[in-house]
Length: 95
Image (cartoon, rainbow, N blue to C red; front, side):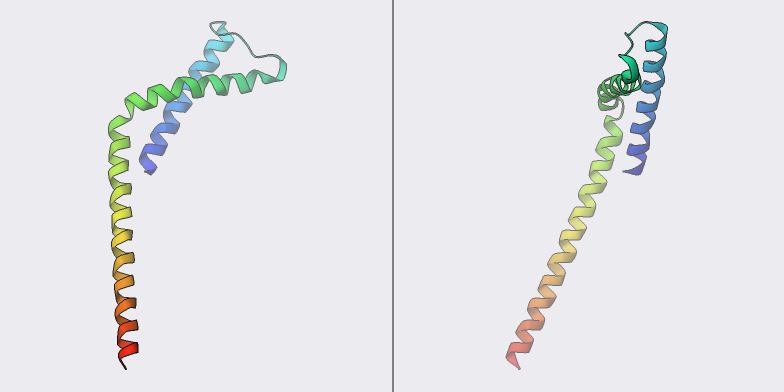
């Protein structure tokens, strides 16, 4: 998951540089007054989202498999703990 996050941040950083260059070269319009930085960040986010969706598809699927595996292990551990508690309660009531 960390690898996917870092790759996503890298795509965003690249888009931020491209957006900054495009705004200052006149390809995209500048923001009004002090909002120029906000405009560039917003533009970079809009550009990076579809790029990340397509380019990082395999990495996202790999991260999803890892997360699902962790959730399944946690569920199995919880079920094992519940069954141990149930067995301890049954043993305590039988005494």
